[in-house]
Each structure stands twice: as C-alpha cells, then as structure tokens.
Image 1: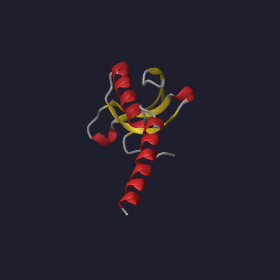
Image 2: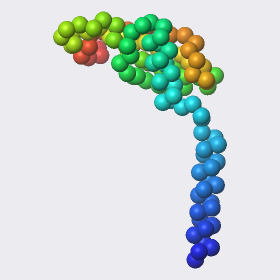
Image 3: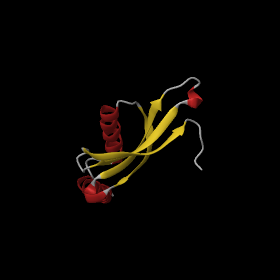
Image 4: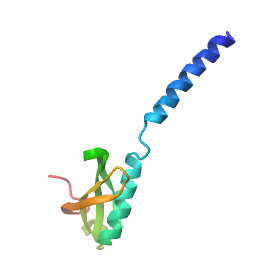
Length: 109
C-alpha cells in the first residue's frame, strides 16, 4: 500500500516538474506590469489598469493599458485613453500607440 502511494506521488511530482520547466518564466502578469511601468515613464500619465494581454509576435506581448490623461472633477468627466503596448519576450517596450480616448464611465459603442 505504501509502495502504491509513493509511486503515485512520484508520478505526479514528475509531471509537475515537467510543467514547471516548460512554463514561460515571464507570463502575462509580468507583461502587464512591465507595460504599465514603461508607458508611465514615457508619457508621464498614471495608468489605471490593463484591458487586455495577449501573445504578440516572436513570443513577445501585446498589452492594452488604460491611462488617465486628464483628471477632472467630478471624476466621471475625466478623460482616459487606451494604449496598445508591444513588448519583446523580455518585457522591453518595442512600441506603443494610442487606440482611443474616452470619458470615464462612457460605454463602448
């Protein structure tokens, strides 16, 4: 009985070790954080969040970051923008562009 348990445990730990070796070291969470930091440094506006993260070309990342461009009172009249940020596989910024600008709370059409 003990031999069966150790055999099962050994098999599952081997599968787990294989998954860890094959898993990307810098995943979507890393890419999202790197995109926000890089964009804030370049444009000087505070990031509000991330709308999308997907694999880009050559194992890089494409991240859509929401940015507060013009803060207003009341907050619902503030202007935000969505930026597409392309990163290489190491999280270094390759390029960015503004996709759209919108008022906070405005629904997508």
